[in-house]
Image (cartoon, rainbow, N blue to C red; front, side, top):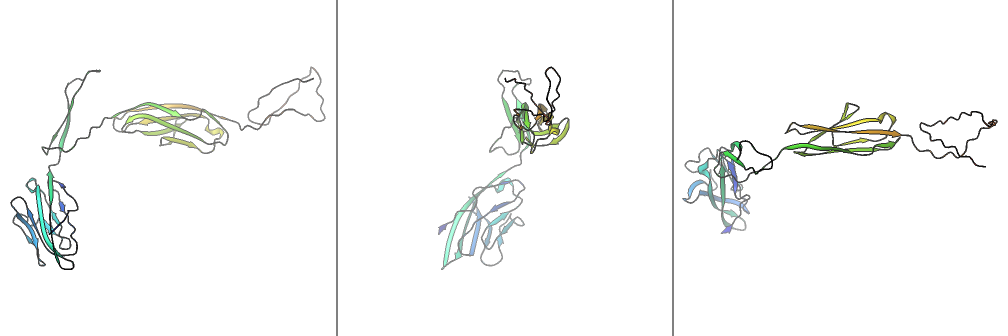
Length: 271
């Protein structure tokens, strides 16, 4: 007989849940018999007629007559163990197959409690934490989580930029679990993301940018502030100023006007 490997082994279920004991034999199914080891208790059998359900499995077992798979409903702790199957299929002729699948059943875990070794923990001294639960006597795994922060919030990005350029500010913080970020510009909320982008800088973008980092588990928040300035677009150096039709007199005042937002004046005398 062909040794057939089940689709999933072991199958894990909780008390009160449903378990699928799934197999995929080759060819067209002709017969199949499921038993519960080690006493070979009949679960369900089929020989091209109506399935025969074993005692104690009435209204709890459904057989898929196309594949031979079994669904066991309302699982209880006594259902845990090894289920064996054997059957035949039509291929070029009749071909026999057999195999087994293990069902593991667990009670739902409730009342999870973390118990410290000291009622009042002391800084810089050892502390033991014990995870206690009600439910299955055997707990397959435990995952420890430590919630902390946010701390050390900072904003990276330029302190100033020229008109029409693009700018990105990035906010970061130490936090477990990762925190959420909210941006404020001059005390008005503007975005909710770790990054704040300005596609084209204008004079209206001058001001204070505040990033607030918030941990939804610890309920704590903290913030950082960046002052941002906008400078005019660099045009170039003006080497000489010509005043057509006007001849300044020595020791007399002359007024020169620059038609850009920011100018830097320099007076150099050449003989």
